Image (cartoon, rainbow, N blue to C red; front, side, top):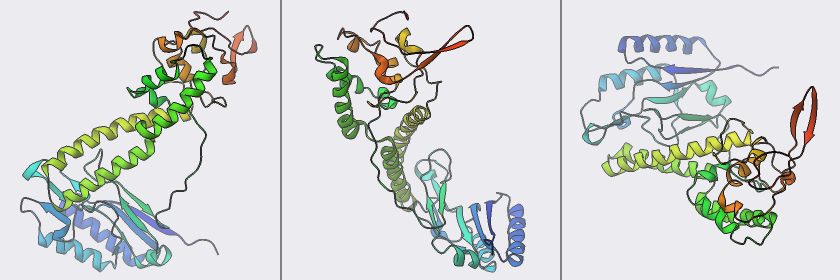
Length: 334
């Protein structure tokens, strides 16, 4: 016997009450005829009770609440509830003008409850939209599994103003070889990343958790200070997203992230995000830092063949594999 079918319907309730009533009627008809497991999720543009709305102004229509509750009950739908901010929409206004309502929800029939009894809905913090996005876990919220990963230079570190000090400290001893300084940079970067920069994904998760906490609190009682803090955290979150974007470009070895103006011509031809060598450094590190006076002042010859990067160049119709072995501040390939 094959797997039984189930149905997911994405809902948008029109602000127009007449159009919304037509939608409720159509869904009632569907629910009465369809015995398959059914999940409805989205913006219903309605709330069921006064506790699902927080405003300094009068505005809760008990007739409208009762009408929506009647629709849900007549279809024998179950509200799956949620983890996270309960009030899913905000007009994003400050002070006494602020209003928050639970307009988004997830409803299911009894067949869905029988087939997917562990379904959990998690509301995420609002960031771009005035609505909370949400995740639906049909088999419960999965637990993260930690894993060990080797060292990798993250290009997003270069966007942090303190990282240049880490590079300076690693190259403080001009008598050491480039490899020794690079090893020192690796050790310093690991500690700095853990104590200062932090894991981008953990930082993103932490900021989202703080935003979620603020929005939970705002659902219960409005605070102007929390409103201002939410805006500051949102700005930090946007900065973190830019760093995450850089990280994913690096992981995908994207070729269209442009480095600084001081990129060495001998290194510039190497793909910035080609696979790193055993030391964990991709060519993008050399693109951005080898032309910098911090590294140049050490007066060392840098052999780049430890990158294990083979660059292919064209000569007539033949392809030749060339390993680059150049000196810092070289202006051309020889």
